Length: 288
Ligand SMILES: Nc1ncnc2c1ncn2[C@@H]1O[C@H](COP(=O)(O)OP(=O)(O)OP(=O)(O)O)[C@@H](O)[C@H]1O
Ligand SMILES: O=P(O)(O)OC[C@H]1O[C@H](OP(=O)(O)OP(=O)(O)O)[C@H](O)[C@@H]1O
Ligand SMILES: [Mg+2]
Image (cartoon, rainbow, N blue to C red; front, side, top):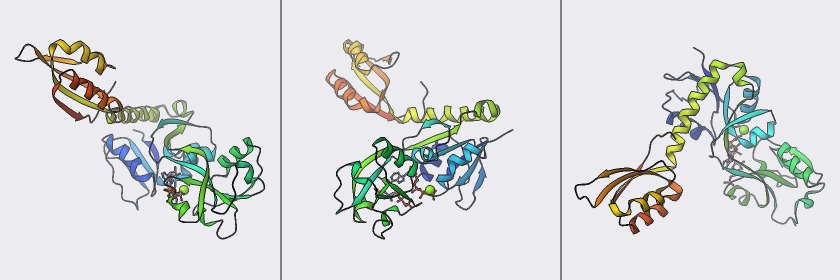
């Protein structure tokens, strides 16, 4: 039996959540940080623990079949790959930041300047569209130090809270690109590797089942029977709630699933309809 090969960041901002997603699918493995290649004991999955910037290249070269990486690294490498799932975590932005005393008036202020970045491709594309010519100083980390040491005039780097910029005498002046983690594969994966592609689909079904459940609540409540149709209309988005008669024939017990983002609105409306004993439960797994 073949294994699906996944490339995951060895150690960094993506590592823990990437592995949490796999674990939430019931896939077991040992994640000793010093072992760089390992196999699941209960699913045909092989793990390669690598630097995040190498992940798109491993997938493109066929060393790995899939990878979990920031969309920023994927776009920066520019390979013609496929995003199979948007995973949503590690959300941040790529921003232009300048020293506090820099008189910034828009992207045109960057004309002729030296910009330090780990993302020259993404940054250059944005500047080109704005008709700005600048030069790039390519650094692979600690970008915020470069203006202080005189090798750049400003930077284009990832920002989340903005604390790193502030602590290094810089101000964020222009967000130019938004990113979060994605799962990538080769476009030709299905034709090239049918057996492994089928394993990927099994993995994706499990991931979708967990992810769907994460945004839903299971609710159970008692309701005056006369308000049932109105309550069903409020809950919405499903075939029908499950309704069970109660000993008191004027009342029913209702079970349903509600999206997290609509939960409080539904909760308040149900209370106005006389719902009592409302129980709310997290759902571990579910399918459409
Ligand atoms: N401050 C942040 N907040 C949220 N997500 C971030 C932040 N900084 C980076 N990320 C995301 O996490 C990814 C990995 O960031 P990390 O800092 O761990 O990378 P790295 O230092 O290049 O690691 P590696 O040693 O694997 O090369 C980034 O490419 C980006 O997608
Ligand atoms: O806006 P903030 O919340 O301060 O986050 C921004 C910092 O986070 C990232 O680096 P990280 O801390 O991952 O370290 P690294 O340079 O080793 O990648 C990024 O490169 C910034 O330096
Ligand atoms: Mg890296």
